[in-house]
Length: 305
Image (tube, rainbow, N blue to C red; front, side, top):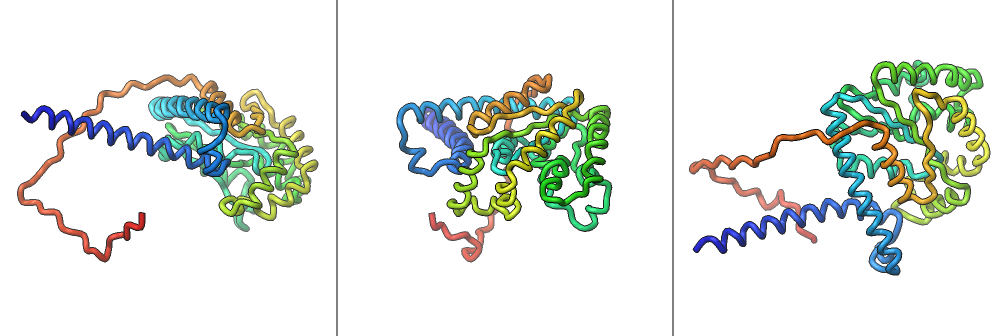
């Protein structure tokens, strides 16, 4: 007579697990709302809806592969460094979020260094980046990197001509040294057009949730578009080496850029699925003399929702 009840409990458990999975996928939807308002997501023609479904389906598939990559990196004790460079509003942060969203932050971490302080300015230029390099079994994603010297520092006059030239003399040897030490170094440049950056900056100006992304330096970079273009061309020409080549991601379409970058990243390493023993949830130990103490009402967060 207890069988129907047991089945009912199992069905309820399966449904709860399914709801939890849906909640986790909704995290991606929350990120998607950064690019569209809620009404657009709920409306739109059939073609747009189909395109969104196709995007999410492929993104979730690629994120599943990223989990396999993470397991392989940890299991085989790889050391991986991925650099993301590009103009302001090119979409670097968006792809980094999608890459790391379902990964273990102890294995895959992001390094987004602020401007150097007074002490760091007196150090060897690469010194503050070295401390963020991975140990065995780790992946580090640099949201901007030592290439700041070839970009913003050059254009804004934050380094001298001698420091700029010394950077180009040093960086190929520095990167070859990283590769010889066993680090897999992958460098991405996110490329957008003049018109696209203009539109994205306007979007940030008029979106209260994104205004924090615009700094005075970003606005100045908009005025100096051509200077940044020349600096980028010089950087790619002088630092595209066999041991650590540059890969250019066409990023005018954000969704395609994310999928293309993740797909390419997966293809750069000979990862494979690492077998894991089956997981069994142990039974909770229960003691007859244990009584759970009530939490004082004053400590409870009001349930406004």
